[in-house]
Image (cartoon, one colour):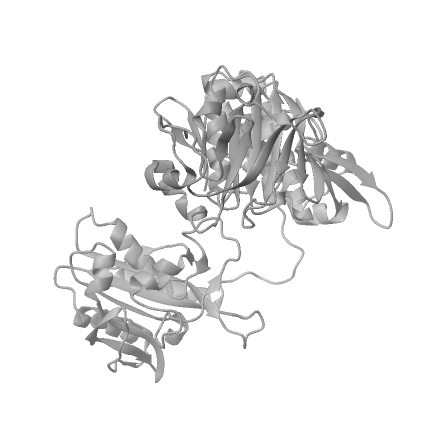
Length: 568
């Protein structure tokens, strides 16, 4: 989850409240922001769900609190001045990164806290919505250091988004005193090396010029000439990326944050070869949600006035619609990128009303709740593992292809346990979680890797979800519960792991066989199939030395994994 550092004094100033820290923490928790501690400078460290990207700065958090307190109400859209500056998009812009947007910010007052907040917001947006700058990257410049040439057919100042050869024009990047070409930046500058993979395969690199020359090399680094400081009062914000909607929403979040500090937003004209846009895009959206659905989901009766009040205290505007059923047309501001479905609006109503204020009630059904058979089996298996000396683990079901396959010595499609076709996430938020794991042993090996500073022996086990693509199922995905365990000792062996399996089999009254097998994660000759009641359901053996080295482990590890339903 993203963690944002927020100065409580700055939060109080922007919110207009004098509440003590403990009261502030309670109010923040009601918004879904969890207090994680303090920085060395005394700032709150707040963790929140990654959908509310408008809260990646103290300004966004303060806005939400003001709505919660009723100080602000309804959808707010900053007033924008007519455009003075133009961004011309040249046909030589790399096709892999064709989109640009921007805004001019006038009259901003940036002290040290304000500048730190702006930098944090920029980097947090890069890491989340921008997908580590791959999908969208932000450049913020001191406008007074730019000199725009006259626009084609006009007299407005203009900058140009274009393509440049790797060995093309030189500029001085941030945190450097030397003039470098874009290609040299990727080779010599620390930030250039970090983000080189984003553009290194392009024939021409993205670049932004004013009349004086190259001043921005997106998505890698800005030029030192236009660096923003606490003396900056006018800013030029530009964003480039692979998706126009994404960079427009990122731009809106930045503009709202600066508007909260008293800045004036000025539009820019973006001229593509075949069309022209005015930016920033502050267009609101509208969704309809039925009153009956709100009551059903929240489990209580609400009058329309209360619902509209809750919407307004969530930063939304709502109009009651009368017809066959009562509904609401809800206006959504541009910074609320999280609202994708009417359910998201109902969540806002619940938070504004106060989830703690909801009255619990029994559901109107005639059944009696009880544990599912699978849950009883899982609890019994977990108790058996703990009784055998294992420490029970609860790991993420999401993992990366590298951890699931490559670091375990496997490839997708190998005819072994765990090598089935993975269920991948189309647009993952993190490169660490790109798929649903196909087996649980990689998760346990990652735990061992992170526990090398702890004493041994370490006996770890987990009962959890695994899945793989299966076209024969209705959903196209086959899920199952899996049981995995590892033994990390100075003399851990196949016999030790098999002994634990035998004890589990006796406990559940099933017949266990372990015929020899081959599996790339295990040592040849020290691995066997787990056959329970005549069905091949898993594998047991000693982890291969190459896998141990890959996980920085310096002692033997034996392990096993099998399907939970085999114990029925």
